[in-house]
Length: 79
Image (tube, rainbow, N blue to C red; front, side, top):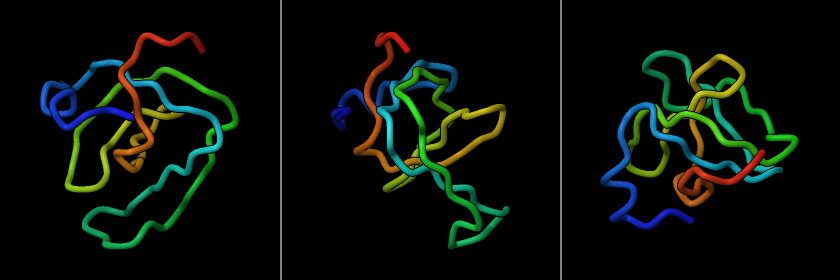
């Protein structure tokens, strides 16, 4: 899991690692609840986009998805 200190240093485009079998959430603009979810089929490294209070946004299959902060790790792992 990524630490609070590491999270503060993340910038758009930095690489983060997503383990397999974690849930990603897709929100409509301004929505409070996710309108779609998906699960990562395998571990992967992807681009960090932004962070919020409990979620951060990452690039997944060409789209921006949200993931719980405790499910991401700093990049550098192999896919």
